[in-house]
Image 1 (cartoon, rainbow, N blue to C red):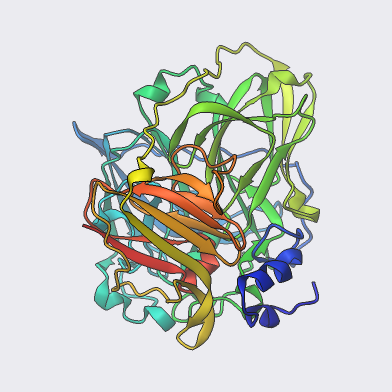
Image 2 (image 1 turned 60 degrees about the horizontal axis):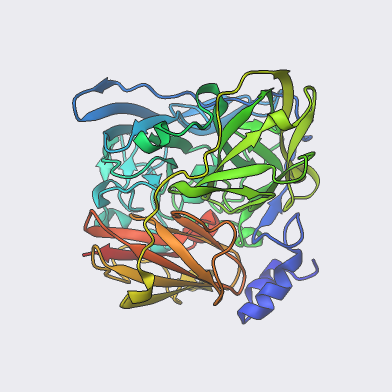
Length: 517
């Protein structure tokens, strides 16, 4: 692409940007981000086994809740074979430990911050009271002192946020259906580098409906956290932060303002891993935990196509299964799928490919069909009851425009032309009332809405896309497109967020706050 990044940022008009960006990144079309190349030789693919994140055991339980203690701390891991990589980790691991909960049973998670920077924890997809949702200025400062600060649009964070010293208790009532959620850092101005350094983990919810379905379970129910990273010569994580200490100055170097993509694909923290599978059905909970990279996931060698049977979306099960040849996953989105490896002869190597990648990022992981096995699972014709929101009678319609803009005199990213201000409420939706929100974009912007899930009712005047079914909390909005969603906030009054889940965009002010009243 001949257009410079500075030249791109000075363009005016969504149409010009959409055309100019077509060759951006490492994959041609399909990305709003730039490739950051590692300084180490890339490791050979399919040489390491797929790790499965450990399931966290409660510290204690009572009649109403399970209680967990997680320590946010630095650790050194061997992510790339032969190299030592310092990380920020929940319990010192990457990904963090998986929490597995029951719908309607409260999970109380106490996070102790032993890192050198402030943190905030957000349960992505959680139906959570506002004081526990991870508002980006509700900082948890490190044990022993208020290390770190904020720059640019976040200097007043400590005055407006509910800050804590050393630790914070997050209470999750989990009054919501079975779903694949995840928790990650949400510190204002510094979410992108802190997630890049490792602050992310799964939180899975089960309920009676999911228990009653004959889907794959146990060792054949596997979460897959897919993300990309780049590495320095010494094996440390490479990231173009303006302030590598993450103490004062937020943001990235100008060349990476569109978003940061790495050239190493990790699944559950391992580069291009391999999983031996039985010739049987498996349930995979796919999470795109990348900062900015979108994936076009396909299974090669799928007999007669249709490699995936989608059974769930961000916020729960679908009403009925849908066969998919390809999953387009934007940052923050989740897809629950069933893959039937009995379709392949024993010994077949099945590669999960990324059609929105090129070179090292065109492959994600490999499955090896190792043995014949019995299988008592099936995919039923119906999965869960989904109440259609009555959007045709909605009285309130709101528009949110996601575009580049000026933030405190610098180029950044805005919603409705304004940079994020944690003290400003840009909407006050009424609890229990269905609203229609129209999301406009100039480039790729995966839009995440906190508190309650939504239903996609149309794209650019047409119907929903093939991957829009079910309850969503993050939607992939493509360049120069608008998406209409129906949303009904309920349960909790208070302040929440909508924002772009391209984390570099989020850090450069592409958030807006609303108050449910």
